[in-house]
Image (cartoon, rainbow, N blue to C red; front, side):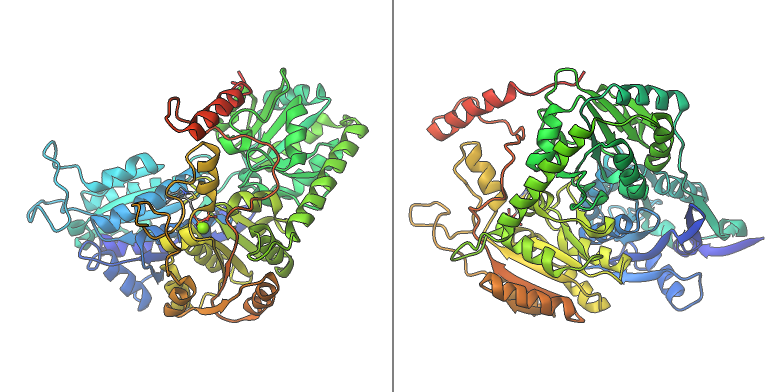
Length: 623
Ligand SMILES: Cc1ncc(C[n+]2csc(CCOP(=O)(O)OP(=O)(O)O)c2C)c(N)n1
Ligand SMILES: [Mg+2]
C-alpha cells in the first residue's frame, strides 16, 4: 500500500509518529516544530504543518519563532530539560534563514543535545537558478550555504529526490537517539522537492519506537577501573552532564556515599548533587570552588563521569597537580572516555556506576579524607553565604542578585544562563537542589541563548518556574523570543542584570593587560575613544514594548520583593536591576589559559605576559 503525499507532508507525518523509550517509559520524540517561513518552505513544510494543524495529518504542533538561531536554542534547551528523550524540529527558509541556524546547530552538537534542523535549500532541478538568496559556487552546483551545517551536525543529508527521504529520516532518528552520537541533525530540503508528490510505502509512517540503551560496560574495563580506584588515597569524582542525561544522580550519590568519594561538578554537571551534601565539593576548575579545586590539586585518582573535560573543567590542565594522577573516564562516547589517558569505561553512567560498585564492594576511601572533604565543602558554603550578603553600595554585587534568586526560587525551579560573568558566578555560588534545576549552557556559552533557552526549558517543563539570568550584552544580542513566550502564554521570569557592558570580558581584558578595551557600553568621547558617558539604553522599556510585564528595581530589597511578585505572576515578567561590574565572585585562584601578547608597547600587557608565562609552568599534558 502507498500513500501519496508531498515531501513536506511526508516529513511532518513521519515525525509525528516517532517515539523514544528508555527504562520502559515511552515519550514522543519530536514534540513540535518551530518555523519561520519564506519562499523556501512556505509551500512545502509550511503547507505540511498546516495540514497537520487542521487535523488532516498525524499532528505536529507548529511554534512560531522570531529568529532561526533562537528556535534552535529553544529546541536544544527543550531536549536538555527532557534529558534528551524528546526534542523539537526547526524549519527555515533558504539562505539567511538557514544559515541563522548554524550557530544553534553548533551549540546543540557541542552540548550533545538532539535537535532536528530542516533548512530549505536551492532548487534540485536548477530550473530557476539562481533563486533568491542562492549563493552560487562557481566550482560546483551541488554546493549551497547549507554545506556550512556539515561540520556542526552529527548527521547531514540533502534530499535531492523524494526517494532519498525514507533512508535519510531513519538515519536522522538513529543519530538523534544515540546517546554517544547525538547533536544537531540536519536534513536540507530543496524548495522544489518539498512540494513534490510521491507514492510512499505506508509503513514509512507507522509508529516507531527508538530505544535509548543503557549500554553496559565491558567487564574487563570495569576491573581495570576498579583496580585504579582501589589504589587511591585521595579519589575525586568529576560529575558532568552525562550523569544528568543518564538520570544517574541517585546512582552517583549512592556510589559517592558508599565509597566515601567527594564530587566536583562541571558546568553541565552542576545539578548532579545537592550543594548541602557533605560530599558535594561543588564547581570544579576555572570557575570552581576552593573545596573542589583543593581536592583536585591533591587527588591521586580522578573519576570523570559523563564529562568531556573542557578547559574550564581542568583549569586548562592545571587543576590536577599530583604528579602520578590517574584518570578513570566513564562515558557513553569513546572519544571522551579516552581523554587524559584515562582508563576508559565506555558505558551509560548509571550502568557503569552500578557495575563498578559491585566490583569495589568492601573498599572505602579513608574516613579522614572524607571528613576533610566535608570541612572544605562547609568552608565554601560559608564563603557563598558571605557573597550572597555583601550589601554592596550603591549598586549591588551580582553575587547578591544570585543569592536572592536562589532564596526566592523553590525546590524544583530552574535557573538558566549561558554567557557573561553570570555562568562562572552561578557555577561557584548557586546552591543546587533538584537535578534539573541548574541549566547553564557552557559548551558553546552562546550570548543570546538565555531567553530562547528559557522558552525551550519552560515548554519542556511547564510545571517548573524558569528563572532566566541575562546580562545586558546577551539581552541585546537576542531578546526576540520574549515575543514568542508572550504569544504562547509561556511564563518566564527574566532577571536582567545591567552592568553597562561586558563585566566578564572586561575583567578578562584587564587580567591579560588589555585594560577593559571595548567592553563597556559608552558613547564615543571627544578624544575618539569609547569611554564617554553611559548610553541611554533602557532595556526594561524594551522588554515592556515586547509585551512583557516589567518590574524595575534599584536596591537588593526592591529586587527581592519584585522577584517574589514575578514568581507568583502568571505571565512572563522581567525584573531589571543594575549591578556593579567590578565585583566578581570569590576566587579559588584557578587559572584559565588565554594567551597574552608576547610583545607589546603597553606595560600592562608586558606585566600580564610575565604572569601568563609563570602560570603556564603549571600546565600538564596528562599523558
Ligand atoms: C555570541 C557570542 N559572542 C561573543 C561572546 C564572547 N563573550 C562572552 S561573555 C561576553 C559579554 C557578555 O555581556 P553581558 O551579557 O552583559 O554579561 P556580563 O559579562 O556583563 O556579565 C562576550 C562578548 C559569546 N560568548 N557569545
Ligand atoms: Mg553586562
